[in-house]
Amino acid sequence: MEIAFAWLPRLLVAAALTIGLSAVVFTLSAVLGLLLSLIHYGREKSWLRGGIEAFSAFFRSVPELVVLFLFFFGGPQVGIDFGPIGSTIIAFTLVGIAFDYQVFKGALKAIAFGQYEAGLALGLPKRIVFLRVLVPQVLPLARKGWITYAIGTVKRMSIASAVSVSEILYVTKQGIAATNAPFTFLTLAVGLYILIVTPLLVFNERKPKQAMAR
Amino acid sequence: MNVLFDPAYQQMLLDGLVMTLLISVIVIIVSNVLALPLAIYMQRPNGVFRRAIIGYSFFARAAPVLALLFALYYGLPRLGIYLEPVPSALIGLIFASTAYNLEFLRSGFESIPNGQFDAAKALGLRPVATYWKVMIPQAYRLAAPSLFSNAIQMVKGSSLASLVAIDELTAASTVIISETYKAIEVLLVVSVFYLLIAAVILALQYLYESRQRLSRR
Image (cartoon, rainbow over the protein chains, first blue to last red):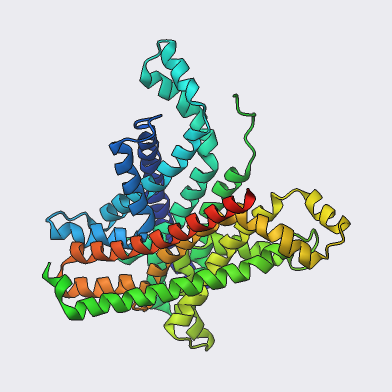
C-alpha cells in the first residue's frame, strides 16, 4: 500500500494528461466530424462525399495502434517529428473524425431535408440554416453514439503508452516494473479510468429533458 | 520500397497476418458463443447471477483492453499461473468483447415486445423452442449491425496483443521498422491487410442482412 501512496501523485498527473488529451481529441474530432458530415449536404453522390467515406472507412478499419505508429515512426521518415504527444493527438483525432462523421451523418439523416430547403426558401443564408436549424437538432440526436465514442476515447488513450506518452497506463507499467506489484497498480489504473468514465456514462444514460421538437 | 520485396520480411508479415487472423477468429467466435447464454439469462427478472453479470459487463467495458492484457501478462505470473502469451491475450480480448456482445444482444432481446413470448406460450411452444424459433432470430436481426461492427473492433483490438509479446501483424511491422526504418511502406501494407479483413466482415454483414431481407418477404 505504501508503494501505491508513493506513486499516487504520478498517477494523478498521468490521469490529468489522459483527461487533457482526451478532451483535445474529443473536441477536434467532434467539430471536424460534424463539418465533414455537413459537406455536400443532401447530395446523394459526389466525389467529395466518396473521398470522405473512403477516409472514414480507412480510419475505422485500421487499428489505432497502427495509425499511431504511422505518425510516430512515419513522421521522422519524411522529416517531420510529431513526437509522442503530437502523434497521439493527430492519430486519435483522425480516427475520432472518422467515427464522429458516421454518427453525425446518421443523425442528419433523421432530420427532414425539407427543413434545409425551407430555411433557404425563407432567404436564410446557408451558414445560418446549418448553425441555427440543423446543428441544434443533430447534436441531441447524435448524443448517444457520440458520447459512447467519447468514453472509448478515454480508454483508447491507454494505447498511447506504446509510444511512451506518460498517461495512466504508461505510469502503471513503470510502476509495475519498479515495484513488481502488478495488481496494486492495475487496480489503481482501472480505478482511475472508471472514475473518469463514470460521469460520462451517467450523463449518457440520462433521458433528454424535453422531447425533441419536430 | 525494397523492404517489401525482401522474402524474409514478407514471410514475417504473412506469419503476423496468420496470427492476427487466428486471434481475431477465435475471439469473435468465442465471445459471441459466450454472450448469447449470458444475454438470455439476463432476460430473467430476478436471476441470482444478474448482479454478477451486470458488474462484469460494467468492469469489462470500463477498463481499457490494454489494462486487461497487462493484468494477465504481468499479473498472472505473480499468482503462480504461467500461461503462454497467446492464451493469455486471448483471455483478455475475449473477456472484453464478450461484454460488448452481451450488451448488444441484451438490448436486442429487450426490444422484442413481451407479448410475443406470451403468444408463443399460448400456442404451446416450450421456452427452448420459443427462444430458438422466436426470440433469438429477432434479437440477432436487431443486434447484427452492432455485432458486426464489434467484430471489426475485435480485429483492431488484436493489434494490442503486439504489446504483450505476441508476434501478430502489428508486432511484425514494428520489428521490420526497427530494422529498416521504412515505417510508412510497412505500415501502409499492414493497414491494407486490416482493411481487407474489415472488408470481409462488412461483406459478411451485407450477406447476412440481404438474406434477412429476403426471408421477410
